[in-house]
Length: 140
Image (cartoon, rainbow, N blue to C red; front, side, top):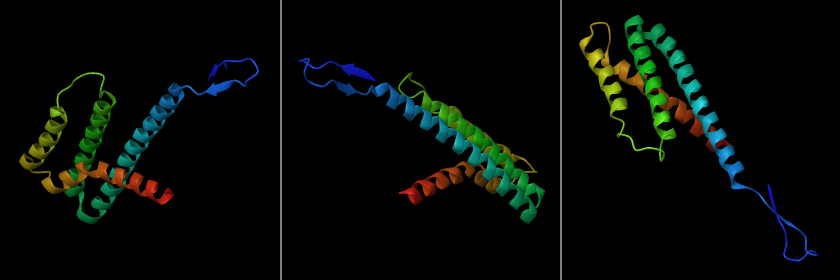
């Protein structure tokens, strides 16, 4: 906090809070949110992957698990690119798009993998986003 002296000595002093603490608090909250989203993504991937394995077998579960793993890596790359917004000019995220295309291409060419479960596994990070949104809406 910064104390700004008043113009006359008889008047009380005014206290003004520095905006750097609010920026630090915002970044701390943002980092907690990123971590929570990553943990929820991994936990939902494991939980749904086990459910798929029990319901559909190991081949479909393997496809889902690979998609969930690639989706987690994609989400991590996405958060890193959001962290760098405004600090440097970067490409439009072609490496992230390439990661998704590579997953689908491998699933399509492989005899052991299926495309749809791999795609749905990739989208598992959206489950974490929906959970966070539901929590925020229930608080309001």
